[in-house]
Length: 317
Image (cartoon, rainbow, N blue to C red; front, top):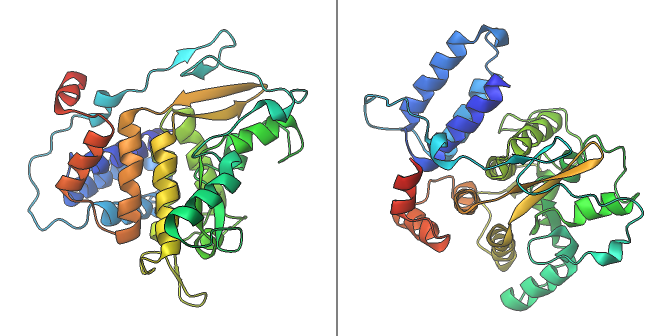
């Protein structure tokens, strides 16, 4: 749990650019050297370095003085404990197996909107978008959200609702099939995750209320997706109509994401997604596709898009 908390901090430091690549590397080294429970296991360090190199890039500047003030203090997620004892951003709600699934209506950015989303993308981008070209990518998968419920996928109204209500977008089929979160994969990918560690990390993040980092880890899997034998190269993919449709679908999902619900025993816990988290997820797609951090102009434009003003930042610090 100590490492998971530090992982989240490092992610925010990178996203919000509080530290340069080399400064953050030094912080990670100091942390690992002082934490002996991992006995020199460098998997964690390698995973962080991969993410840092992607979104920040090696710094050409010499190390400067490091201000050890965590930016996480600026953007604390507000949660409350319901009468049931579970932490939640909103009151817990039940969707029992006896509830008719027809009572739910799913809109833009939800898995349950899949067919309509494919139609929207086909019309907008003048390209066929269907199960033959794209697949629904749960940025946080059903197995993660449904952990501990005992319900199999599609077996109950509750399980169907958890899956259909989950944020999802239409990713290119060949890319989705190659992602570490698709299926069960025991061998780590280039981002450092196995199928199990990927899901375990996402679960811990959403339980902490950090939906943004969970989704960014999903996009991290795509950023490092390259398989010459299968002819798959996410960052080398041409900016085709199919790629534009996938990007459109992802960004639309982020724009419409208000919360994320997961199972905790016999209760459903909902975590709110604020403007800062939306901005982080929005920018993550740019970094995943290009391997480069967005320009300051692009960052400022996204902050403005989601209503994040400098005055608000100062008030939060």
